Image 1 (cartoon, rainbow, N blue to C red):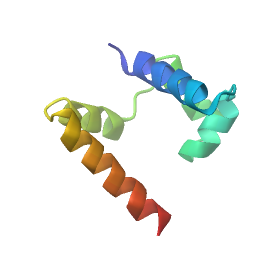
Image 2 (cartoon, one colour):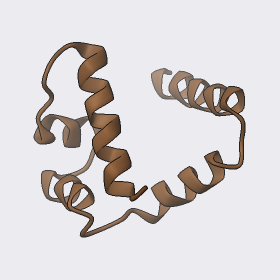
Image 3 (cartoon, one colour):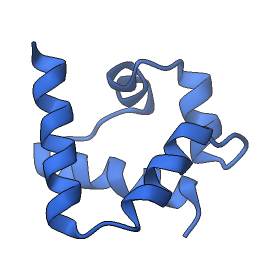
Length: 79
């Protein structure tokens, strides 16, 4: 699966979870990137290397470990 497909799937899952449409601009704002950058990711024009590296690393872990890592990251962002 291409990175752009993964991003589109995640975007759709977030919309479903929040029960609302989320524009590309809003998602770009949430990610702290420009609209241009986000749309380039979605069109497969550009791929952020760090995101690819994280997905490659996550693919080597089990689901529970991934959840623990993401929750720890969320907690550290709140503080």
